[in-house]
Amino acid sequence: MSRRPLIAGNWKMNGLRAEAQELATEIATLRKAQPDGAFDLLVCPPYIVMETVGNAVDGAGVFLGAQTCHTAEKGAHTGDISPVMLKDAGCSHVILGHSERRSDHGESDADVQAQAIAAHAQDLITIICVGETESERESGKALDVVGEQIIGSVPAGATAENTVIAYEPVWAIGTGKVATPDDVQKVHAAIRETLGDKLGQDAAQGMRILYGGSMKPGNAQELLALADVDGGLIGGAALKSEDFWAIAQSCPSI
Image 1 (tube, rainbow, N blue to C red):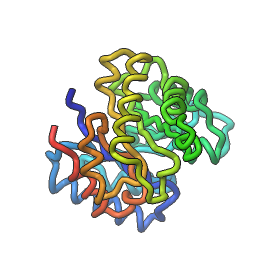
Image 2 (image 1 turned 120 degrees about the vertical axis):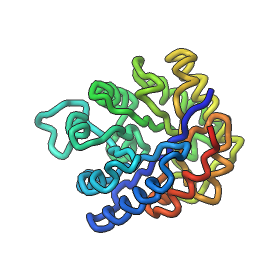
Image 3 (image 1 turned 30 degrees about the vertical axis):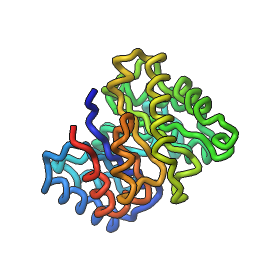
Image 4 (image 1 turned 45 degrees about the vertical axis):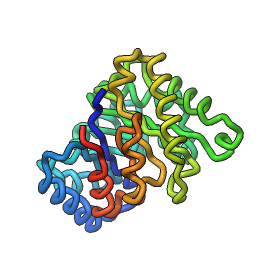
């Protein structure tokens, strides 16, 4: 089945207004010059510059997303942002369950699933992150850990239209380490199998699974050519427009 690649930039806690404006404008300009590229582009900036970035990419064929969301629509949740607010800000996507959220904020699989349900209720596309630590991989538990995260984090109502999965081995995020292509394909195939068991084969075969673990221009083509890799969730390389665009250009034609 052909799945349109998604190249998503997770800016994390980076970008003041001037920097965000410049980066977003550069990405928008590149996309406008190749509007028919066979891939989707998404940028997920910090909340504080979301309006700046949204204005810069508006009409350029670049989607706007957030890095997490709360489960409630509004209320006494100091420091949190609701899916309703994200939708109102122009977002189409939201990243959920990133390992940094799981570790820094103690988010569980159940928390991620609740966030996804709330986001889906506002017609947001969720990018649900899963991945094992280095010790879990070394002990041979990678597939078990990732499988449990899929079962616990992905809502029963998830579809290929409203959900994307991102496999991010924790030990490869921001470290420069990259899983071998064989390992990446093995995990992605296992994720798709687990999705099939949970959601049915139609949803599993249509759902995009991104790789996110130090993907950069030098390794993107090899990783994106793998049968079950449908794009990338990009961290550091997303902060340089030329690197982000080079990764997108590495997507195979569909």
